[in-house]
Length: 331
Ligand code: NAD
Image (cartoon, helix red, strand yellow):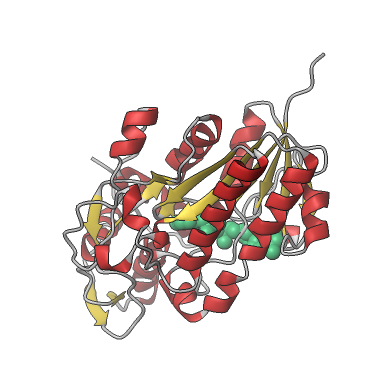
């Protein structure tokens, strides 16, 4: 009987990694899930995976993680929403050690395919100065002016993947994720991103009876958000593809943060007073994904609309918070 591939998911205790592990297991793969957090803090943990707690900034840990493996997804990074990355630039940049040591181990062990999770934060700031962003094309990453700290690390690691491919023949593939959201991720504590933060705040406003929500900035900054199921599928499709250059994996359904709040209010059946915190971290003024290339090369488009994905996210956060609130029936 032929053995299935052994696939390693680095950062598998995290949000995207947890969903990816679950999907790979459901397809019958052997999966090794690696994360530095204690397993009790993983967002999802399957007893059918081989679960290892390792700090992948350390070179020896990367060799241990990849031993005997066929393919690797590197999703491990110290990251969070704008509040975290604007205030922890050194920590974000230290993730460069993870990808560097993983690539070295992958080369020596003979890994057949290597995936690196990059980010829309690699895009040049001067291409994101207005809310009417037409969508960032892959070529907009250069001349380089990425998000300070986190974005520079991602851009550098992308190049490292490229040169390991060119010089050592590693089949490295890179996706530039645009905001990913969904259940089983963080929604409190400072690392959460806008979709989860808005859901939590709308729930808290109802529970406390304040009926008020704080919004970072004036709420007119724009973003696009990709539901986790689309991300998990796109990630695997990119690893299996012949696409050698970094490619966008995101949604082109652009909304303002105010519109995102409208959506969650609609889901919850409430209308809240908005308090704008103008000096809070806001990130770039406008950002969305141009999906022309991925459409052309992989015939890929996100399949889940923001309202539908946010409904699932809101319900999961509400239940994880242990809050019982009536949700109006969807139409
Ligand atoms: P996450 O924080 O939920 O998961 C990352 C995981 O990596 C965490 O569980 C963390 O413990 C682990 N990790 C950090 N340092 C480690 C180390 N030294 N050794 C082992 N594990 C370590 O984040 P996520 O949202 O699942 O993101 C996954 C990847 O996708 C990251 O590389 C992130 O930069 C990238 N990305 C995510 C988004 C998004 O919207 N979620 C957008 C762009 C890029």
